[in-house]
Amino acid sequence: MENYIIEMLHITKVFPGIVANDDITLQLKKGEIHALLGENGAGKSTLMSVLFGLYQAEKGEIKKNGEVVQISNPNDANRLGIGMVHQHFKLVEIFTVLENIILGVEPNKMGFLQKKEAREKVVALSKKYGLYVDPDALVEKISVGMQQRVEILKMLYRDNEILIFDEPTAVLTPQEIDELMEIMRGFAKEGKSILFITHKLNEIMSVADRCTVLRKGKCIGTVDIKDTTKEELSRMMVGRDVNFSVEKKESKPGDVILSVNNLAVTSKTSKNNAVNDVSFDVRAGEIVCIAGIDGNGQTELVSAITGLEKITKGKIKLCGQDITKASIRKRSKVGMSHIPEDRHKHGLVLDYNLEDNIVLQRYWQPEFQKNGFIKRQEVRNYAENLIEKYDVRSGQGPVSITRSMSGGNQQKAIIARELDKKHELLVAVQPTRGLDVGAIEFIHKQLVASRDAGKAVLLVSLELDEVMDVSDRILVMYEGDIVGELDPKNTTVEELGLYMSGAKRDKVKEEAYAE
Image (cartoon, rainbow, N blue to C red):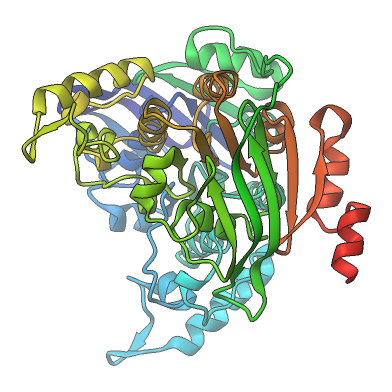
């Protein structure tokens, strides 16, 4: 008989309108990396939230080292050595890194906080595991990758031996993903046991020992990674074969839809510009991708184009109209749709229900309002149509509170809203972040269909496969400059990587940069 460090036996968790976990059994061996795979809304995060004490199951039991345990809250989980890095980080932005790590377990003597010894332990842990962080940096000022390191250090600081990672690579660059995979292997060698929620089959094949697959709240099965393939896992996950390649015809670029001229945006973290004198066009009927390692100005460039950030100099034209100083609503009316990088900050009102989020950009239009009053039935009908078309899953359909939905289904709701409204330009930033392979396949088809319908698509992606497969032209950003323009048909991932790292520049760009 196997010895398992954690057993979740016949777990059932019910929410209004949905059985999130339906009689699921999951068993974790000591020192293994166990992947949990499933579509958006399959019940993965819910199951891990039950293990971490955030939810209580209606049925089933949890055992640690063969003995039944009660986990009523995260403090109970921590006492049992269970830690969790959540998909959306649980950090206090105005606190420092050190304050976040020790929050809830602050060392004190006679009621006085002892930060010195806490700092020494955090520094020692960060050195031991290669997780460099600045203990005194404010969380709101550090990158997403650094914030994840803080979450991992929170677990290590509490001496957790069972580590839950919920979609840990969804917000990381390719380089940061490689680092995290190495860190996870190191944890497993030390005897720590890891539960790893992900949609990314390549990561599972590279780092996991076993994988349990969920579909629509049920357990489909557990397999040894050495005995399976990506194709078999995707079939188990979505119940059908998935096409991993993007099928598209040759692009036929038309008129210039978006024109960006000599655009500069001031950096909030340094004296240099985040975007430095950038110019490019996007035409109807083409997908132009901005590629680059995260933090090289892509976020500020998109924020300037979409109206989220003021520009220092330059001009932006959309469909021939100068929108440099236009409001976000004006840009939307002229023909811009925007799938934002941060779905929580800029994509959704989380405490609104799903149907209200779906009409956020259009509620003032005649079809949805009359004399200032919203036509609720028209909104409901429209939302139900998009929910079905884009397979947005939620417990109570259009009246579900958006905060209660899985991250992937929140993303699908934004994509449905932005693709369905009338637009000439689609600005899509990390559109498949946090989506499963079936949803990624669908979204890629929608981007290509938008292009083929004569729309201009500006894609920003950190996924090299997506950059190479979906785009018609690639513009590479490095330290605020566009350092290369590449044709995906005539380049390689290796060459793209050289441009992204700054090791290579177009000759024209080099001359301009030298001047």
